Length: 556
RNA sequence: GCACCCGUAGCUCAGCGGAUUAGAGUACUUGGCUUCGAACCAAGGGGUCGCAGGUUCGAAUCCUGCCGGGUGUACCA
Image (cartoon, rainbow, N blue to C red; front, side, top):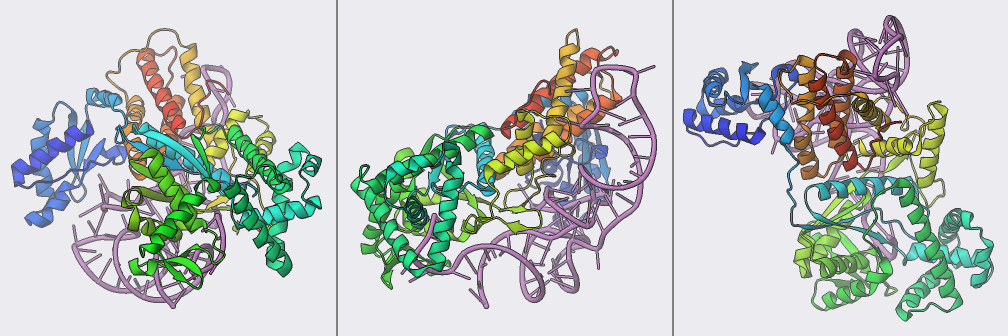
């Protein structure tokens, strides 16, 4: 519908003024119409004519050319062309589906990326939810999506935790791990990380030991060691971490990952590749380390292999990138991380581009902001003052109890997911355990409620829904909003911005609630027509919620 | 120092490939439940869109400078 009209207008422009123009119809305020365009304003400059004259001429032509779809063409303001669709055309808009812009493509989406042996904080919850909804968007656009989860099971942070674990156990004795109760494992590990981190910063001797432990972890992987006491401790606590991640994903009810890629799996390939490319001049030696001089391409220098001979995160990312390429030959690889890695990732991708241009050019890095506590304090797992991912869910449940409405788990999840999804990706999120979970206003529960109400009508009503004709004002407003769905999803997919879905669904639900308040469905003369409308509305809302990973219960 | 991101109602945020009267939520004030679910609806007050220039018939939106905040800037991830 939209594109047909755009072509019709482009045709009219060409016929009247002889210029080729790409028309982009917008959705104006309802009082102006269903679609609007400012072509006349754009044309006035290049034609040297009054924009209103141009608009009037176009309006005249359109009134006859698109009379079938458009009931009214008006010129307003400085020269806007406002179009009002006929009821039939508006109803036809229900057929519009989101475009399959990525049909036939294989797209990798990497997100969540928690590190074993470190705590899962609120940021992990955020990045997991953002990644899940982006992966859903990509899938909705027709792509074959591969969900990847990359985590640092080797590296300095592991050295820190392992050092503290051994310290806490007293000696390298795996059986002593049994003293940690299963339920206490996550916090116990989190405490070890903080302990190791503090020791690294404050105690020179401990720092040297940690550096040594770190090397032992790399060696353990190189040797395939699963039997030494040190290795047994490592593999056991690593599994504890993976179990804990699984618990978070289970509680969040996010789509399952297709593959977990531990850093240890790509370390060798990364190290080897960087060494090879060092020979070829992509990398260079500097102060005992191997670096990439990003300054040559307007970025900054980065260390890929440190002076200890160990690969840094950079080299491992090289290994990861090549592993993805070798295993999937993807059309696009999306990586979702926090903002602080923006410039880091640019250097890494610039380096990879030197010797593996294809995966580098097909990689897209999306970033989100940090989760802040009320008052603007950033959370840090290094200092230990963290709100963990599961604590956020717990806080949500408590806040839900406090409202007296006793929301179930479905509603709690909707509240949390929506609170994190409704903001544009990129900015920081202020998390207020009390407010972000509020069950009213622009929230997940509001949307679920607006859905359940509609389903309730449908369940109670007898008789058949009928086709939509001779619409009244309130009915038309609701239908108009419903038909915007496909356009909104297309926009969210194009920008990979799930918040557009939130904004739209909230407006849709508001439109319905207002309709509900002012129009009776059951028992009204127009029951059949209104049932059809309510049905369309409920299905649309449910579809949108699904894209956000939020359920649409029939009752609540 | 340099690079990147951000600065819109008290608070939390949409809007930013320029355009019809800057929008929501929340908080505050007020009205609406004997009829389909009031987790709702209806109405009201509240903004020099950080500041100053520039481009344009037209700027919250584009450009430049400044101020304020955040992040990154060699062996952390």
